[in-house]
Length: 430
Image (cartoon, rainbow, N blue to C red; front, side, top):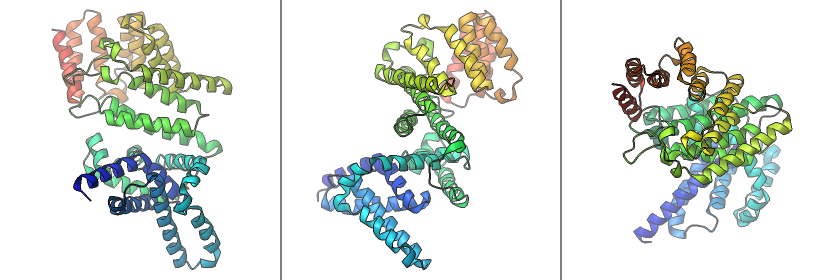
């Protein structure tokens, strides 16, 4: 086989793995009830593909080949485990039945017949990777690893964290899940709401880190936004009756629609009111509006108020509807932040409300809210507090005070582009 053909095959394997890995890990985890073992067995299937496909060619249904190979590995693993436990007679019939289901000869037909089950497996994997027994950092890393198909190196690079740190988080997360005997199952009844909230939080955090990077040289990390958006869309397909699932999807679609306009040709940040709205992605806006409408319909049918994600999506929709900045319905946005503060109160929500109030009713009204937040411990090192205060002071003509606030904000910023933007605002106040 030529070097070019081998290279093309390896590229094909990489692409298939990125698309199919989550389904494979999920399918195997249903057999093993251990996502750590499931990932190892899925990796074994990937190694088998790397060994065989360059010689035999890429199969017509590569995802099914990988799934069947991984499940055969799982059956071998279970057989060894059960033999060691001397339970041959008890589990023999079950193993034979399971093995019959996964004969590769009719895997194509099996895929069609069991599409719903694969979806359930994926949903189980999402809920397991985002289990509240894990720390937030661990949930994020494990989700990107198992559901995003990202390598440890890619996750580390995305979050500007040393690779060994990410590797340790993932290993500890798997051990924690095993030690806690977290079942590979869908949460039911009263357990569903907090578990779903944990899943949505992880996807939201991944998107936010991509949308406005905490640290480093770049204002945005588009790969993380793309991954969060993909996970949100998967979740919509798997949990289509949950209003906040659609609310989160709507929020991410609408926010992502502005991505191309958020940086200039030199990579410098472009703030919302200065963006070229012709560069906003209309397809993503339409997708976001449809998702928001669905969230509203589901909430109305359940007789419940909009959740935090749907409310934030409603705010984003106000911006999306404004063809020019002056057309923005700021009183409506301020009212939505009032509602959000009731549903999910936090100092950051209150700060954002101050911005909306300042735009709707004048900078003095916004400054009054901001000044009340100055002693808030949770905002002590939050660069956007002095930044917002500086903007409001500047609009009131108090330029010397505004400059000091922007300089203080720049001193708190850990992102290089953000720091440059804030120092530029400070210079403009001279």
